[in-house]
Length: 289
Ligand SMILES: [Zn+2]
Ligand SMILES: [Zn+2]
Image 1 (cartoon, rainbow, N blue to C red):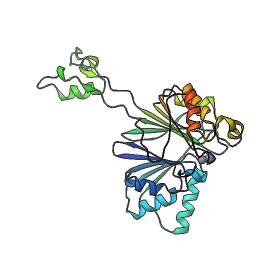
Image 2 (cartoon, rainbow, N blue to C red):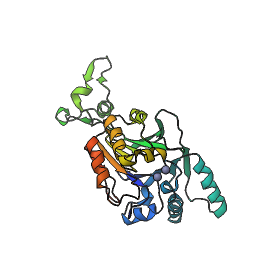
Image 3 (cartoon, helix red, strand yellow):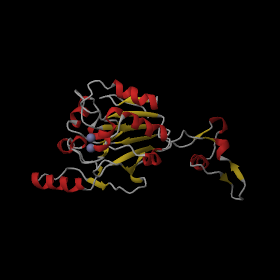
Image 4 (spheres, protein in one colour):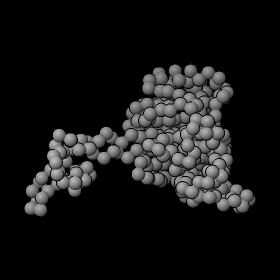
C-alpha cells in the first residue's frame, strides 16, 4: 500500500532488541523511531523474497561503521549465508563483530534456535513456495517472588534462593522447613509473540501457535481474491483471523497488505468478523505483548 514500508518488526525485551525481517530501508526507520540499532541482539529473516531482507546489507554495514563489537545472531534460510560471504569477499571488509549464523529448518516441529536470559526463539515452517519460516518469541517466565509477610529478620538467604527456584526447603534431618506454595507467589505465565510471515492458510499452523498472546499473520488480500492469495502463496484477512481463532490467540495483528488496497479498513473488518481482537500492523506503532 502507498506509504507503507516493506516488512520489518522489532521485538523489544527490557533493553534488548530482536529484529524480524529487514525490508529495504529498515535501518532508516529504526533510526527515525530512535530504536537503538546497537541494542539488536538477533535478526530473524523469514524468507529470501526481497521485501523481507534487502535492508539487511545496509543495516549490517551501519553496525560495522558504528564500531559494533557485540556478537550478532542471524537466524535465516541457509542460502543467505553464501550471499553474505560473497558480499564480504567482494567488498573485502570483514565485519567488525562476530556474526553467528543459524540456518533455519523446515522440520515440522517447533525448533528452538536461540535463547538468552530474556527470551527464546523457535521457528516453524510456513507454506509460501520458497523456504520460509515463522518465529515464536517466548519471554522467560519471571522468577517467583517471596511473600513479604512470611519473611523475618535473618531469613536464610539460601532458602530464599531455593524457594524462588520453586524448591521446597528441608533441614538436615529431612523435615520440611519452608514450602514453595506457602512462601512464594506464582509468577505470571510467560508471554509469547508469533510472527507468521508470507504463507498460505494452513490449519497445521495452529499446533505451533496455541494460546499465543499476540499473533502477527500476513493478510495480503481480502476474501474476494482468495484464489489469487492461494496461487501466490499468501493468505486473506479472513484466513489470518481463522488461524488466530483456531490457535485461541489473545490478539491478532495483520499486515503485508497488497498495494492494490489504498484503504485497508475492509481487510480489518473482514478479519474482525472472524476474530474481533484484530488490529493492523501500522508503521511505527508499538504493541505490548
Ligand atoms: Zn514472500
Ligand atoms: Zn512478502
